Structures are given as structure tokens and as C-alpha cells.
Image 1 (cartoon, helix red, strand yellow):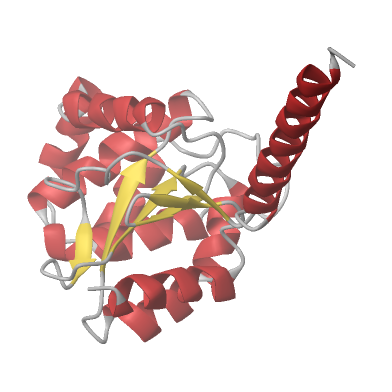
Image 2: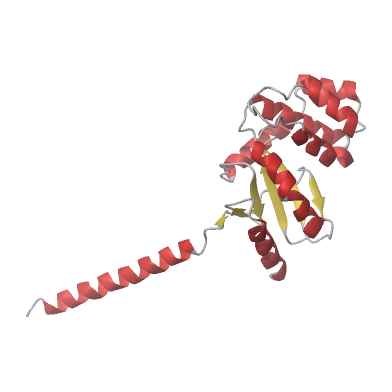
Length: 221
């Protein structure tokens, strides 16, 4: 009988542990659509459209060689722009990812040069680069200086000789390296990755989840 209080205390402790564990597991199950990150990615100097004074910031981490990024740009991006950017409700920014190596880096260097030399044409140039992705054999080499010059000539007002020099001399390397550091800092593991006010969507193709999070953030400000 002397051990009875000790047993009761042990049972209470085990019960409390079980309750806490159940609460943690329940919260995890209720947060399957998003992953919280610390802080917002800095967008100063990044290509950005929409209302830069908005309390809601949406960021795409994208790779020009990524087939899923092209698909996202065709399936989700137009609706997002129509619903929230063209209505001045949010800002939308793009950060380069280099998961596919040298071609990803070259395309990113080109995009950064266009953004510097003719920022109004940046989004047209970006879309056209994605459009040039081959429908099959995605690993085939297609991002070349010649191709990027062709795209720039058809979508921008940049001086093509200067543009080619910037590519060959890798003038915008610091900007591309900065993006690579942001990819590491914010734990980007796949492309496209979409962040809304520092919260990463687990499924970037779930537009209803993106919309719900944006609306929630808008209502909270």
C-alpha cells in the first residue's frame, strides 16, 4: 500500500503525456497544407509585380529548367495574377532556383540582365523562356546563349550586344548567387515552391489552398 501514491502519480503523468501527444499529432494533421518559415523572403531587388504596399507577399521559387514550374505557370499562375495581382491585392515576386545546374544558372543570369536593362519586359521574357521548354526530353540542352538572345530580341527592348556581353561575362552572378542563398535559407526543396507571407504551400498546384491562405492573410490585416 505504501507504493499506491507513487502508482497514482505515474498514472497521472502517463495520462498527461498521452493527452499532450494526441494534441500535437492533431495539430500536425491539421497543418498538412502549409509549412511555416521564419520571416518573409526579402524581395528588394527581386522581380515584383502588383501592389508592393500590400500586407500580403507571395513569392515563387522557380527553376527555368523545371517542367513543373512551366506547368504551374500555365495552370495556376494566370488565375493568381487575375484574382490578386491585377486587382492590386498582393505583391508577387520571383526568386531563381538552380536545381537543374548550368542551364538553370544561365537562364537566371539572362533573366536578371533583362530585369536590370528592361524591367518592364521581364515577365514577358520569363514566360517565353518557360514556353521554350521542350515538351519531351526535358534533360536535353536547350538553354543556350543563342536561344536567350533570340528570346530577348522578340520580347524585350534590350541592346542585344550588351545582353550577350552580360551573359558571357556573367555580369549578374552576384544576384543569382544571392537567390541561391535564399533557396538554402528558406529550405526550398522542390520547384515551384510558393510562399505566402512566409508560409510555404506543400502543394503549389492546390489553388484553393493558396487562395484560402491569401484571403486569410488579407482579412487579418
